[in-house]
Image (cartoon, rainbow, N blue to C red):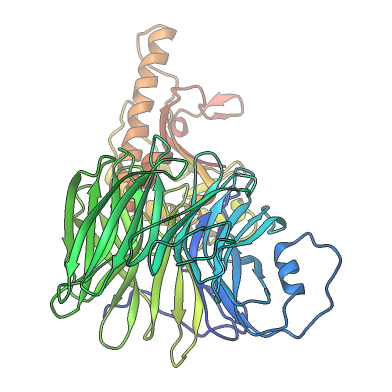
Length: 574
């Protein structure tokens, strides 16, 4: 299989390995993985999952301010415990917390609160459900263990428009009349849904299903406040994939058994549902063929259960998507896995609005790697959470990866220390050769006489083009690597003050027009030589302007007309 991400020597216990690629691998003593990920309001990234540790018994404290410290105080056992990891834009771990509940458990979902905190959802390995509300520093605000007396499992936790959350999963049938959460069961296993207020209080809990095995997989809130649920139903003879619409209070509006598979037919497994910007819905499914090779299937439908599109994406290797999200331009990105006989890689796939594949990239080593979740960041990059298994290892590690909009791996910012010093270091050769100078306000001025414009000219000469070709490669590589810090790249055209036989008004306007054309010539040269990914980013930060002779060069009180005919660049930081 094609491996696009190489893994080097791993660092010591509980440390992250990063290279210039934005890849963070968190090592624990035993198996560990991350199942969900979100962006914080300070632009850091937080992911949750589980790790396994051993802790000797400790004396409990009387009061706690941190959720994980509280859970740690009641633990003296080894097993799965929910974990939270936060990383910054330099791919450095800035917070890592692991619960020590006296019952083994896993976190499956994390969602943001309006106050930059978190709701974390999960379940214990013996069948209880967990929801914790934390502040931005992982201090406890609310912790709830709930469910039936039988076996329950959470599949996902969904943020709602009122600030509350919806827990979706399954529950084994409960027949106990004393069970105040689920009074009765419908079948062997039932869909369960619990709605919480933004304060963490349970508003309602309900079961749905048939007399067979039903499992809630995922849900999403519609624009009108109703909820669309995707689930499965399995009997001895068939297996269904079902879509259900319920009110905000949990009352069923409609149920549609979309896919009914009878015994011996190909299996279809749903993984995620999202609401698109046009208020339709897309479900990702794993479709198995006649030889049990899985590939990707996507179904789009509307609020009234009308199927709008149903596409299968065939890939060379068995593949599946575990999560999907929509960019602002309508393109989808999905993440999951691609595998051959001996190993699996993390899969990132771009999909157009017609549900056809545009591009796929594979990331991983020689063993087991998989992506479980993604979140689209504020700058259209993508943060991905999953599991990585190192070479010659049998234990999984937590894995956070950052991708660009085109599914290529993002780079860690190369900026260290002062931005001005880093920029000067990048152009040390050009500064030494007196081709340009850089001011502390991050203005870049060309100083080689061959780079000035002739009187009335704005078309680039061969000398200017040659220099800009080399200059732009360095500049764009530098600012793209540090794009988290950059708001604007201004390209300003200038002119000398003369213009024959006209008054001041015409002289200013003619030079304004000329300076604009000079700015555009340089902007066009810089922009046209970049690849499409950089062009899309540049289109958001480039600012071209003509300043006429308002910033002409004065030497000893006299205008230097030659040096005034120029273009300058300025980097404006956030």
